[in-house]
Amino acid sequence: MKFAVPPILLLALASTPPEALAADAKPNVVFILADDMGFSDLGCYGGEIETPNLDRLAEHGLRFTQFYNTARCWPTRGALLTGYYAQQIRRDKMPGVPRTGGIRGRRQAWAPLLPHFLKPEGYRCYHSGKWHIDGKVLAGGFDRSFNTNNQGNFFSPRGNSLDDRPYRPEGDQSDYYATVATADFAIEFLQEHAEQHADRPFFQYVAFIAPHFPLHALPEDIAKYRDAYLEGWHTMRQARFERQREMGIHETTLSPLETKLGPPYHFPDAFEKLGPGEARFPVPWKDLTEEQQRFQATKMAIHAAMVDRMDHEIGRIVKQLETMGALDNTLICFASDNGASAEIMVRNGGHDPSAPPGSAASYLCLGPGFSSACNTPFRRHKTWVHEGGISTPLVVHWPAGIEARGELRHTPSHVVDVVPTVLELAGVEKPAEWKETPIPAAPGRSLVPAFAKDVAIDRDHLWWLHEGHRAVRVGDWKLVAANGDPWELYDLKNDRAESKNLAASHPEKVRELAARWERQLDEAKRLAAQPAE
Image 1 (tube, rainbow, N blue to C red):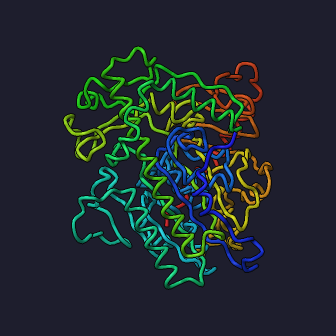
Image 2 (cartoon, helix red, strand yellow):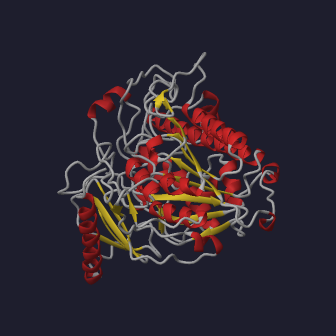
Image 3 (cartoon, rainbow, N blue to C red):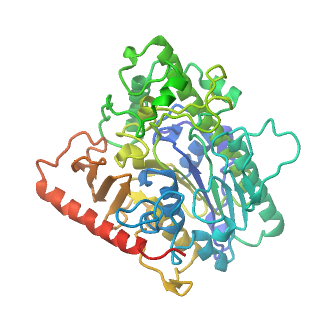
């Protein structure tokens, strides 16, 4: 089954034949990252949310079905722009290694960001949106940046920065909305590039905050979905699951809802502030009160509105690429930094129960019920390293470099693969040292072979650690455990839903993979113990 793309949108993607481009033209790269978006939220991954712009990129490009992140925002961003696991570069907590993790960890001198390798090859580099990486943006090799530091209110520019200086907008800001502003500046930087640097390739990193909490959306976007989710998360999961199977996204079963698994962090006061409509667990929909059903459906409607608006703004960026004649030779990638979130909290300006849901005075989070549905067909959520926490769509579009149209790629891959992929396409050989410090081997692998056909990328393993949750994948085998729990073993070839634990029947495989996980941990500790820059 192919997802429908409006014919008028297909016209925008009519591409120049690759042979018409200069043989030595280095590709431009635009990497777009969503925040807390579920695996199944896009239409081209089975969702009912209207995402025509990303769907059309997929229709004329590729969809990866087993692409992974790190289960959390800042580790994913560090891994994405360096090609190392976040623990290796001190950007996530490491047992026994002080001063690592969160916003406190600082990278070593040998771990520069991707723009530092691209700039000597003539690339201009631009950033718009969320940062959440150690150090200033321009010091990370970017030439221009709009940094949405204000992540607690989508309707206020307060605290944001432009080129690492306080952003002081002129005029009335009553119509400010972070998702639109992120695209506005991305487009402005592209226009500037076309006017002043048209002879140079560019790398653009667009990092939307959406649909991260607080659930803030424009009223007209919320209205589109206001009553769309009143049948509940079970109905939504089943519908998305069936569409995914028809599309060939997976061949797994649908994971059962874990009705006793709530948010990863418990804030009891949040439930008092949010009122009786909130629900801590993904219980059967029929067991909720009518008030709870409406409250939960409204939260999902706002989440959908945020994804819808993000897709609309991505369409504007793509249109700018087309206008400046850059679309054909621009590699566009889209992914999410972690799975949808089960978190429930009230922060920043607090929550006014009398304010319209989704407005600036409200503070809502998606919660575990609809987070489970957004992560269909997988188990668990952001923070956990079960499939629901670490699986993301990856849409790849590059008319001049990828002949395939609308195809799937099933090879397991990870955000650490982005750096080696981009460097290969840009013709950049990674140096042996940086700032007189040897650069250690990185775990990422180039995905370029998979652009041509659906082949497996050779690698030893993929590895995860976050908040005590841990996992390793070797081939189709995955060993995973939540913090404090024993190892579970799954054959992902047939069971990405992680519903049949094979640990008891395959103890030798558990020992083998556990030893593999420990070796990678020791290697990460060795690197993390090296002093920061």
